Image 1 (cartoon, one colour):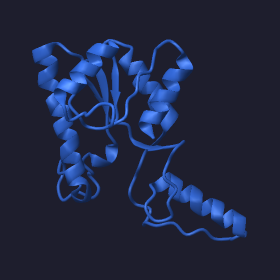
Image 2 (cartoon, rainbow, N blue to C red; image 1 turned 90 degrees about the vertical axis):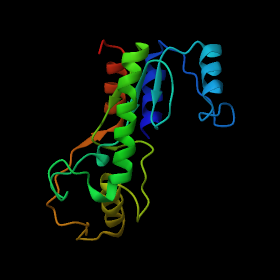
Image 3 (cartoon, rainbow, N blue to C red; image 1 turned 90 degrees about the horizontal axis):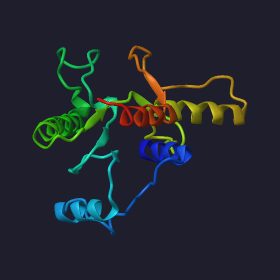
Image 4 (spheres, rainbow, N blue to C red; image 1 turned 180 degrees about the vertical axis):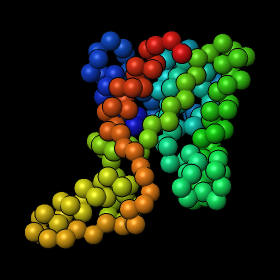
Length: 179
C-alpha cells in the first residue's frame, strides 16, 4: 500500500523516471546483482518499503505499530509484546543505516508513519487494520439498514491515522530536501 502510493505520487509529479523490477529480475539477496542493477540503471534514489540492504540514497519506511506502546507494554520503552519481532527488525533496519551513512557518506532516511489507511488497503473481515475494518462494518451495516454497528476493543487505546497519499507526499518531500 505504501510503496504503491509513493509510486502514484512520483508518477503524478512527472519529473522522474520510475524503475521497478520483480524478484525474478533482480535477487535482492544477491548484493552483486543489486549493485549491477543499480549501476546499469543509473539509480540515484530508492524508496524501500521493506527491509533489505541497498546502497545509495533511500527512504526506509516502516509502520508505527512496531514501536513501543506506552499504554500496553509492561514498562515504558519496552517493545509491545505482540509486535516485538517486527519491532526488532525495524530497529535493526534503522541501526544498520547509521554506520552506512557515516562510512560511505550515503544519505539514508528512515521514516515511521503512523497507522496508514487508503487505496490498496486490506478489507478482509478478520485480519484488516482498524480503518478498513470499520469502513467495512459501516458499509455492510448500511447495506443491511442495521441500526447498530459493533466494533472490537474497549475504546481505551489511542491511535493516530494517516492517509497513504499524505504519507507518500511526505516521503517524496523528505527525499527531495537536505537531511
